[in-house]
Amino acid sequence: FRSLGESLFVGATKPWGRSVAEFAAAYGGGQPEATIIASGRKTMASRAALANGTMALGFEYADFGAGSRPYPFAVTGPLVLAEAEKRSGADLVVAIVIGYEVMARTTRAMLPKDLTPFYVPALYGTLGSSAGCARVLGLDGAQTTAALGLGAAFTGGTFQGHEEGSWQRSLNGGMASERGVTAAQLARTGFKA
Image (cartoon, rainbow, N blue to C red; front, side):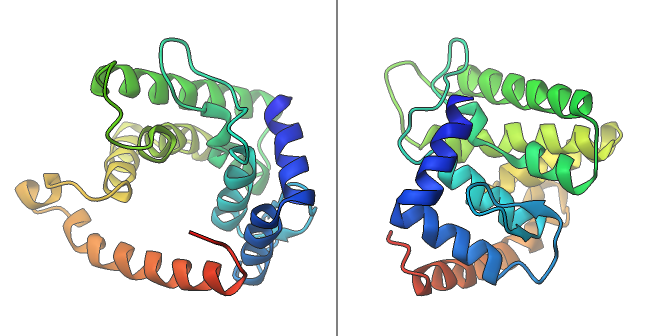
């Protein structure tokens, strides 16, 4: 509940919360799939996830995973996707638990205790959100593996696609282009870097 309260507070009172909510609503393609916390407006699920995750991490008062340093509830992908897919509360809880587990376990496995080279929620949170969202969508094992591999690519790119000749290699150009457009559109709303 603390993360929800933080999201409501940041979305209603802080310029970055209002700015990202404005961006999500304006550039959501008119798709009323999921709710932007604090504003109640609807947009496409991926934009709602961006806005809600930004608000949930607005002051970094979020929860910690056992034995790890991420803020798992700030990774709200399963939440908005469950709403968009009209899933039950039980499905949502299982997806969030899966997201927490993947995020915490990859953090513990990959991050040295005395070194934080990357921002944990951005890096390992993408993997946790990918796993939780895969559950919400009912993906099979091969599709879940693909979702996790693509999630890893979304954190900055991997060379696995080069080694395997997979589609993910080509996706890197598209992701860079999408991020550039998103960055410029966010800046237009007043969001600061």
